[in-house]
Length: 477
Image (tube, rainbow, N blue to C red):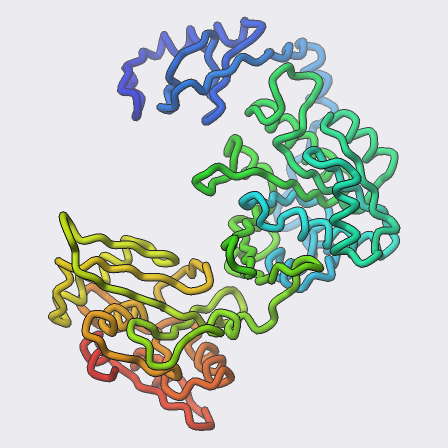
């Protein structure tokens, strides 16, 4: 007997085999739009736990035994030793957008498949058409396929952001995958953009565009085009209201790179981050500013995040993280207020809530600060969600500052990881973070003692304060 995790329904191995056999013999099946599970009949709840997600789709006829045998012989490959496989640097295409090249690992790899996601209106299409026009300016054709807009609408955006660099940029308003394949075979572009994958469909399937089977089939065709013809392909994908990529998870496994475009609608800063990259690191971030003429690269990202920081404000302190190949300086803000009723509330933007709860527990146990009757709010200014633990000390000091009404100077920066024992642990790339803080004009840096021992040769009026525990850091401020 097998029990599903969410529904708690028991199935025997015989029932599973019987259901699979019914699916193979049926002319149509019902496919869950959440997990892709197939069923020979409609059910209200899928075994993944989702309700009303089963939609009817046509089953493609399986190839005969002769076709399978013949195709297998045609595609037969030979096993070779790993030491005999030729290895070399991938050929990359320069997009002429430095921040995009940084996130991609140096540029577009030929034959790669890249998935770009983000909320509506965040700037995905703007960024891609800027990159497409830059590549087309080199003289080779670029194919931009739009399934959501007309060619006139894309032309209006291109006139605004491309500045006349449209000579070899070809537009195609099409959603049929077979027509797109024919156009790509005739044009032989050096770069293909699909905007978006949820609007594409294959005539071989009767399901609606955006369904699991359609998205999967279209992605497979695009992967085949890119790998066979050595063409990089950009695919724009929708996101759900929770911020996750819409559609089956298999799409993320198929592609070589997954990019996510984030930002606040009421702010101009946009952050591009890679969640998957087979040809580079995933720790790099790209920063852009949304302007009338399109997306502009931000060279001094630390200055943008610290631009509105006030001097002598309660609950505000600067910190730093190391993203990819550059340090970023950020502002951490905290606020505490008495709880009116019920349990105290904990809210964090840019900081994991589990990490915040741990820092509050260490503050209460090791620093003697009781916040059980206080609501605590923490915010990383700018909308960036830094990875790592180097911001722990800044979060703790910001909470202490607002709880005890202690003001921190604008020229003070704090970095360090807090342990459960209240000790302060060193952070990676501490020397580079300190050099960036010196360049930005900071006068005092609170950091772990181990990092201070490794730093030498700093000039100017910078003062490094090495500490070993959270209690020492509180005494310093």
